[in-house]
Length: 81
Image (cartoon, rainbow, N blue to C red; front, top):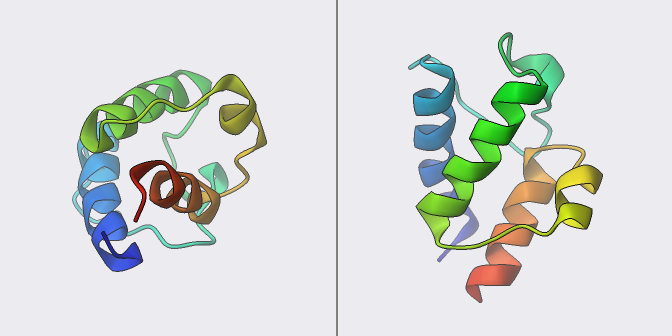
């Protein structure tokens, strides 16, 4: 799986979780960039990303992720892409 493919799938997950078809994420996207991204939605987002990619983030990964680029890095590492 390429990084572009990860982002295609992440965009769909973000659009679904936040119910906003205009969302397009990139490496630098953070919770500050998406209006409804609060702590509760973060939990929903993590669960949706785990389900989409068939992976599990550990607590250390969840708390240290600073942006969507770091999330994509972890997804690529865990899926062996």
